[in-house]
Length: 549
Image (cartoon, rainbow, N blue to C red; front, side):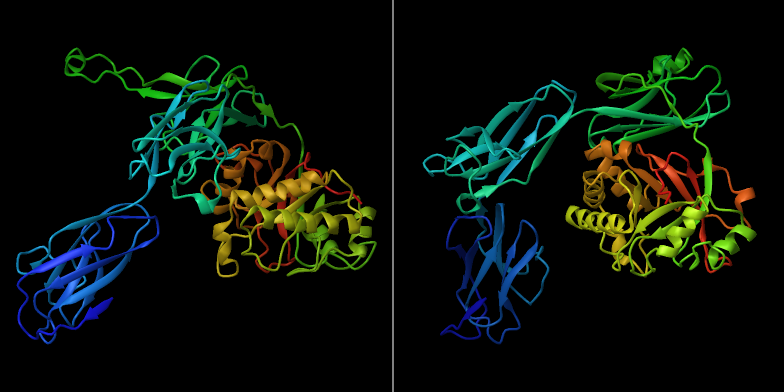
């Protein structure tokens, strides 16, 4: 702000004029707004104030002189301004007591893009419309729409301020596009040539998968069914429905998120399931219908956009293993005659497996004596990797880096390929506040590092629906369904209290409800909390690829 002293003093201003040094500005550039009064405000307990009346924002003020200049910056759109001579305030005046200037407007060049439909079925057409705040005629610029991943130009327009293109995909998937105002280039221009551009705009052609699992084919057993779409239904006209092989809806339609789940009790032959995405058609609720007392028909799914096809549930017939995991070494003796192992074996039961850490961090890494003891006791080892900084669980590179370190440690110890290595993702709290930010990219990074080295990725975290880890895991599965098929989940929820041992371990059916497809095979059902023996209790499906030294 630049107050300019007036040669006049003290008189109340009678007129106020507002000007700008330009009516059109580049995105992020400043415009100088100047308010000039006939009289100085020095010593009057009043100020010259300039407001962005579009947003109610105070752009600047001057309490001396009769002129006030302010540099104001915006990124896109048309902004209106007015100046006032008023007692100093940060609130836009609404009454008539303040002396006000003429209104002016400044346009910051910007580009927006909309779609007639952003989520559609495979093969359907979507029309994208890009709009610039300025007409491109005679500017030397074009309004251009590009495919973001390939940088290929889809269309361009040399006149007016709108540009349209129609695109499609024959199968389910996503296309990312961007609209750019820039000099003509057949591929996406470098940033220094871009005048304005939109954020990446996503258009989804729907795909749908169904994951169904049960522990038995007998009547009374429960099938857990999860349907997953590749797009969020919340702001779309669509919903997800799950149906059995007779066409019966087995759970309420799901209108928010990209998943839908159902627990179905088997009453006869094993059912199969399919999911579909469409528009929910409600039953006739007209006055005539009510007068005739007709029973309301259940809602139907119409205008089907995508269908998964029938899926037969997977039956887990593997046996359940009981074991423990510990921060501490379980023995310093190759025959396991001392340490935690004999305590656990005598007080809780002989463990089928033991979870131990690969490297020395917060907990000591597994020792040669422990490896020898596991061999002599025919006990499996569940290898765990963690980092000193349990808050650092964000981003693909971080997940991949941890995976590379885990693979190197596993090879150094002698763990063969094909064994699962579990990444320890702790819940957010005082010890790990940053764990609240765990994301799908981190999950993908760990997955890629392990599968690339021919180890099996496993994830230790909160498997409960809506948790930070479950949300991150489901985001990774949405982007890459193979993550669900080729990795294992180890959940610490629900966490139980009580005098459990190998002989009275809880029912496995209590575990897992991520609300997306997963291969949940390990459940840490009870934490040690300083108990004796100082171990956590776990159940495991026997198809988990343990290390047997």
